Image (cartoon, rainbow, N blue to C red; front, top):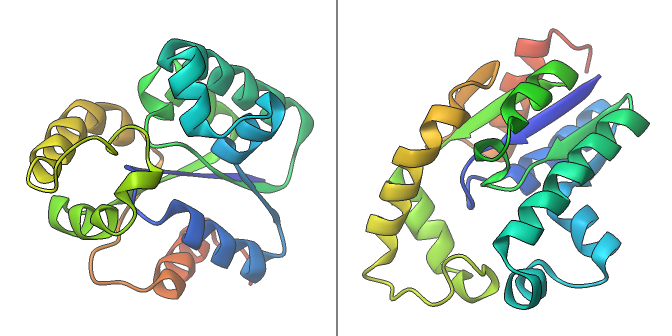
Length: 173
């Protein structure tokens, strides 16, 4: 079984995937890390040197490779992955998908802590960030809500969220 976690940056995909990985004894693969390793550049460098279009093509190829070569993994997707090409159809066809839904306030709080490490928001002022997040969420929710399951993560721990996912999967933990 492939479990795909999607949601906006800062929604906790990585932390929850790691928790799930431990609980279910499944390998965790972070899509951005996979792309970074394949291209021998950080995501920020890829965006800076090759551009977003190149990155989105790499993202799609990586999705196809991972789905073709793995059966039992937890896949943490990039925040924009579902919004390009027909990625959501591919994700839902090849995995069980979970949208980790968070409020603009929670996302802003989390992203302010490491803004400089994220190429999409690094140049924004702290005051601009909430509006930027709200606008992106509005654009991306159309894709995010196509996930097979939607988990509201506000006021929940990573363990509570992982347990909720396991319960929805009816997977023996």
